[in-house]
Length: 76
Image 1 (cartoon, rainbow, N blue to C red):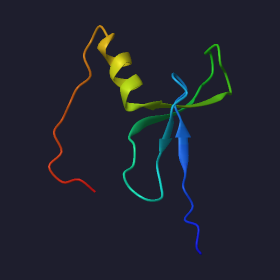
Image 2 (image 1 turned 90 degrees about the vertical axis):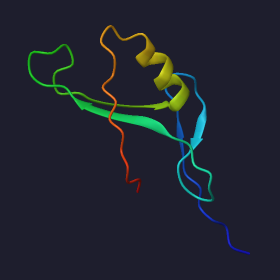
Image 3 (image 1 turned 180 degrees about the vertical axis):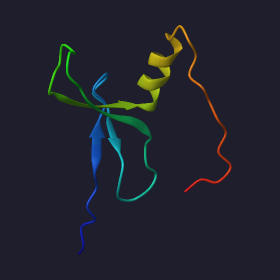
């Protein structure tokens, strides 16, 4: 019996587990890595977070300037 490895990401906003590898279907989300530079309040820190698709949608609805959306015709 073989066990296929399954990888999950945890949404930093709601805590949902989002499957990103293994047997489909896979979830979608936004992974962000930010290295803060000099003169910021976080000088020398690197922050990582992940948002599930639902939390991403909620977050961008609150933006004063809408997200630019570009249609992609070839999906990998």
